[in-house]
Image (cartoon, rainbow, N blue to C red):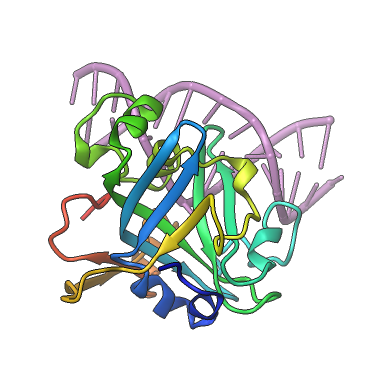
Length: 192
DNA sequence: GTCCTGATCCTCT
DNA sequence: GAGGATCAGGACG
């Protein structure tokens, strides 16, 4: 069951939490890979840490797109990160997917990122992008249809969600926004 | 044009 | 636990 446009229209903090436990699916020529989302971060309008803080540019334009749009960007000269755009078009808010629990297409993931332990295949925003075979070509792509989409969680029992400050922000000590979420006790997250 | 910074990850020690 | 790789975007002149 695919997540609908209405789902992504909700407040970004809620989407970030609701995405935990959902499944990110990529059907690529090399194979079908599936990962369960276990860690996310919310980036809101007016947030100094957001790429959209200083308004729309060519790079961040996907963030201003309709709900359910993919926002992929290049960072640190080497890596890519994958975000899900939320709220209505013109409101630049998004959820950064930080870690996945590998579910399907494990061999395909290892071919892409290298042979390593299961819990180290997708435990970081750029690693999961590599393992899932997501590229800049997927920037601005709609997540409401194949080949790249997210399906609802099947768990009836929802695990406790832990809230923390976001990773890597300069404000660090001063950042009181608790906008990072992960499933308690999950061994596939990027960092405690 | 030039400089600086970063929503990271890997490789050492 | 620390440091390096490596480059695009944005600020400033």
